[in-house]
Length: 249
Image (cartoon, rainbow, N blue to C red):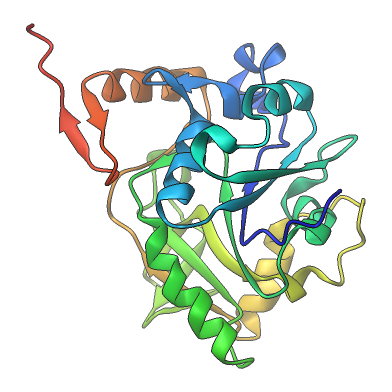
């Protein structure tokens, strides 16, 4: 792996079991919605926000991702690839990619999420973490609980993420993490993120925000079909905003 000192990472190594049979022959992040792969939409959003070096981890059918996206030059970014012989789960994947990441706060997003969240909003979080070694050392973008996850993940109160509380939200797979939080994870070993998050939240290390805008975790073929239909009637401008397409012409 070459050290590019990326400030952003896209998670793209998962098998996508719930998306089968589509993911039997194609990695989930390459599945198209509205004419473009989900992961390309994430790359474009990060590029608009000024993240010009991006690390991407791959495992299942990873060669297809590398071949399709290359070095990222067509989107004005540099992509560095972190290969996993088998999916290492989220924390394991991040730890394995640490040689590619700039020490300190890093934006981490999932390659199969579609959203209109503006990643430029996380630049201030990064700057604040860089100015101080005090908490928070992680920041989560939370979303309203979808029907398939009605109980939510964590409580969000006064800008801090709590393990318990009434105002529970779902983690939107968009976050900023101090890379040092993953130093204790053994590179090359599987490691889930949730136990680490619970530990960090309990220690008061995690801030959060609620995002009520457009966000879709395309987990099943039905989810993808609905998102594809939605994007078929909108265009995606350079500012990331939806614009209706006149389909009567």
